[in-house]
Length: 211
Image (cartoon, rainbow, N blue to C red; front, side, top):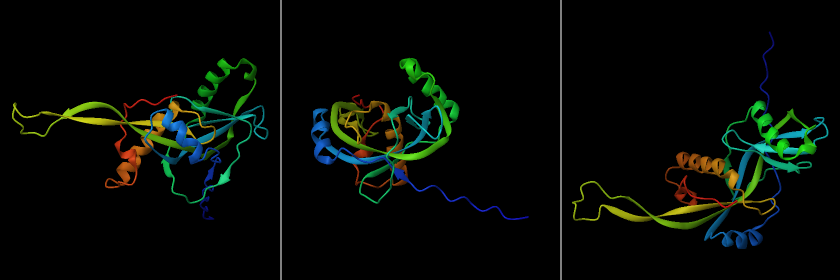
């Protein structure tokens, strides 16, 4: 019986980063960001169209996202190259049924596209360019160290870091991507618990994101 050969993984591909640091910085500062950095978010893409060979749009999503991104036209995919941007995992591959539900909501808002269908054979992993901005949010309070007497300070003031997610394709704020970005930041923190080279370690789940 012939041995089954392992199928090599598909090469990692990325959508082009059309918004550079010069353009991203003033937009992030308008949202209150004091620091920012480029990032890549891994998502799953599936074509929308009447046939798989002629897609008219793409849905980009991951399992832990509440909704999918709709990108019109073909995807301009490029081979991934090493850079200094933060690489974030967006989550597990969604099922075809999940993509069908996401597309149902898109079709309800766009009746003219009702005849278009999800094309499962086109599903693949892609990396979406992002810009992440960080700003100091409102002060909060956390419990002090155990053993403090009642007369001593039992609560200490701290500030929560606020996260802004900006598209590297169009420059628009993408609040819908916050769950996937935060999950990716937590994964980076768990993988490198002592890493200090990214401000993302300070971001909290309950911080607001414009968009």
